[in-house]
Image (cartoon, rainbow, N blue to C red; front, side, top):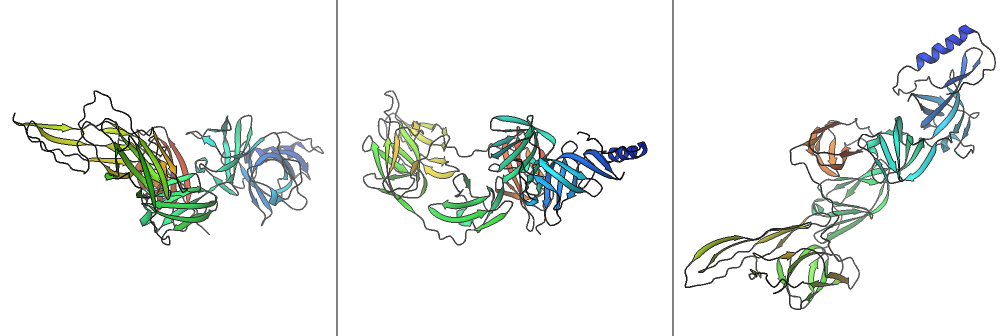
Length: 526
């Protein structure tokens, strides 16, 4: 802070009084509103009125009362000043602006009368850097560092996050928000949210539970009952699918607003696509969702994910997953030749259960054989064979596959004892005949996988009591409540009828201990 030259001398008692007022007012480091003591005394007029200079963050604008609220950069103290037609205001380009053209979060050099709390002038402090349109940022777990555009900044102890006139906590910033950052010497002093987020709540969603919701081109979630999603503000096309049924709606999400999407008026129309399979080698046997199909003509399948198993003598059995999303498509299924020394234990798998009898004069020996378990990203196939050899043999072959593509689909399947199954997607292709998006689902699909703690550790939300608690959009319960902890990021959403919904982004580096949170009370909607 700099001390301006006084216009005229004053007596020592008066100066002592001024120092006393200034020192007493600056005691403490909290941020009470309208704590009017900050800046540097620059001039004494009539030995009473003090003119101060200050460098401060603009916190709030109130055109109704012709007032502006500021926060001192060094102490965090906040105070309110009034303005009138004689107040001069300059933006960061040096242009004269009106009060309603000012943006909160900006850092200004201000000049004001401490006695009347009147703002005389303000101009943007261009010693601070302004980074705009930041939509990819990361805040560390301790909320002491922020990284964006390849640089890392220390977050000041009195740093503020502002969404218009609303003050936010750092953990209320969400992925997809767009911000402006004000920094100096790699230290961040304020953040202004230029594009925030709102909330999308599903009701009457019974038919679509366990299906998928797509909001725009970037948000895909498995639908759970009564879910609430955090969505960047904007207008979107929402697509909902489940078991071949599809619904499309349009929504506009405002900042901080909750939009209710009623699914009861969606007419459920199950769609089918005709898939033509070409096998290599020719004549290979194909099973879809556990049932043998003929590939001599097109196979009609519901839109959605299906498991395809291809078999042929002398070749490695292959398991694939296809996502049917077009009226017609052709798919090539290619198998690799098996090793010559491979023992073929395969049994007829035309049905889920098969019984084979073998008679031998040498007698009867009992044997119980358990097939191998094959695991991959898309699921697990388990097979069990119980049989009697050198006499009468009864073989039962069963299997269950769980396939994932942005979620999990339960699909039945078969595998015989000793059979080698290749679950990769090599040598397979799909060609759409009539548009759409029929695809081969990759085994290394980017579907979200959450590893929850296996030691019973939980995240506890103790407050605000009575609020609905959602974790990553999924309903958990009424606070106080808890959920299993998992390493990584978790978005906690708090909702209560008649109150402003809020979300917090939490990051957990370990799942070895319980964590408790008591969030601020929700704001009542006026």
